Structures are given as structure tokens and as C-alpha cells.
Image (tube, rainbow, N blue to C red; front, top):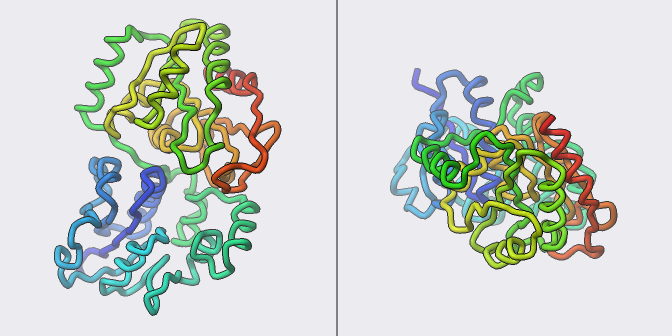
Amino acid sequence: MGKMGILIIKLGAIGDVLRTTAILPALKDRYKNCRISWVTKKEAFDILKNNDLINDIFLIENNLKEKLNDESFDLIINFDDDFDACKLASLFNYKKIIGAYLENNKRAYTKDSSSWFDMGLISKFGKKKADELKASNKEAYQNILFKILNVNSEKYKIYEPQLILDKKNIEFAKHFSEKNNIGKNLVIGINTGAGGRWQDKKLSIEDTIELIDKLNNELKNVKLLLFGGPEEKERNNKIKNDIKTGIIDAGCENSLLEFASLVNLCNVLVTSDSLAMHIGIALRKNIVCFFAPTSQQEIELYGRGIKILPKKGCVCCYKPKCDITPEWDIDEFVDGVKRLVK
């Protein structure tokens, strides 16, 4: 009897791909000696490439029907409501499918995956009800997936997202540490930006400056690292220019795994609900993360983190711009860091 063949489809965003990797050890435990293939987009490839639990990685940008030819799978798992992902899930022969697929060229999802998709963009209840379900949800994303996949609930906390850094990335971080004289100091990562989709996911420049100065003044033997992507370059320059204390710039032009290797230097990461947060979780970091328009209930910190909600403002509204701009107690962030470094 051949190995059970499983195809996972998860295209993006990169943080979503990363948090979905928690199902890999669960699947390997449940289906002994299974062979797992994963389809994603090229920008997420590096997140998966060093993971020994994945046998094959395929990129949707390639002609997969031609590449995989007439391959059939025992199980197809698609937790992505993207049209291309649904189309792909319907392309191959399978014994069982869990998740989203195409039916009469429209996106649909299997009944056993409704606990996830009922809250999403393709919800059979429509957007208004889906948003209400999302706001009232109390379950972490991974736990929802484990229940859908019928995984042993006693092991939920054991199955964590997977991110494996290779030697090249670890050397990159080591060189960065030496160049910036980090030594044996306490390292706090500051990642308060959050791309452009949800404007109120991020901390304001003024709040970030206050946070940096307070951390520097209230903690001993500390080195702060300022993180960001290309879109945060101007923002981070302003922060560096306006702080009264000091910070090490991690740079805004790092590759995905270079960024991850610098996060790996941190003892604590202060972050928005962003890719940096998912990387920190997968690297088993202590995390202080703050939430406004997106769901804090959906995020599992595995006992290594503190969640902060605004003292005033929207919570879990999923609006591009919150009706009420979040207001934060920066001392709560500082206290969170102190609790995690004790």
C-alpha cells in the first residue's frame, strides 16, 4: 500500500501560510508516513522551503495541471477562499476534499469546514452575518483547523507553526549582532507598522516614539531593534529622528528569512497583528502584540505572549479605517515587556 497523499493549498498572505503550518505535525501524527504536498505563491516559498514535514512545494504561478499531470490525492485541504485556490482544489482527482472548491464555477466549501468559512468572504450567510460570526468567535485559527481536520484536541498546544531558519540566515543575524554590538544585552524588537490594508492595525509614530523612549529608560542592559518592511521606510526614519534615546535599525529591505533571522535575535517582540507577529510565534518568541480592527481571539500565542487591546476604539471591526481611532496606553506595552523578561 502506497503512502497517503495529501495536498495542502494555502496561497497567502504569508502570515496566513505560516500559521497554517501548525497542521503539518498534526497531519503527520494522524496519517503515519503520509506524503504532503503544498501549493503556495512564490512570495511564501521561503517560509516553507526548509520544512522537512513537506515533501513537495509547488508554486501556483507554474502550470500545475501540467506539472502534476494526472496525479490524484487521497486528501485535498484548501483553507484559502481565493478563486485560484478554489479552482486548483477542483482540478485534481481526490478521494476526499476539506475546505473551499469550485462548484458551477462559484466558490463553495465543504460542510465540515463551515466553522472557518462561515466567518469569511465566501460565507453562505453573506458578509454581514460573517462579520458578526468573526467578531463573536472565541477560537484560535489553528484550533478551528484542528477540529475541522478531526485532530486530537489534547494535542492542540503541541502543534505549533513551523519556521526553520537555515545556516545562511543564522549567520546573517550573527553578523548583524556583532556589527551592532548587541552582545548579551536584552533585545526587544519593535514592529509597530502593519502594511496598508488596515490603517489602524499600526501604532502611530508618536506612540511608537513614546514606547521606545520608555523602554530605554525603564529597562537595563537593553538593545531595541526597529523592524519594518519597504513600506515603513519613511515612517521608521521619522521614528529614528524623533526619539530621545537610541534604537538599532533592523532595515526595511531584508529578505523574508533575513527579517525572520533578526526577529530570532529578540528576547521579546512588540508587534502589531502582522507578518512579524506570525514569524515571532513560529520562532517561539515572547510577544507583546496589540489588536484593533482584527481578531485577537484568532491568534494563539502558546503561553508566550500578552495581548493588548485599545483603551478606546474599534475592536475586531475588520474595517480598512476604524470608525473610532484606537487609543493606547503605552505604559501597558512597557509593563507587558517587563512581565515577559522577568
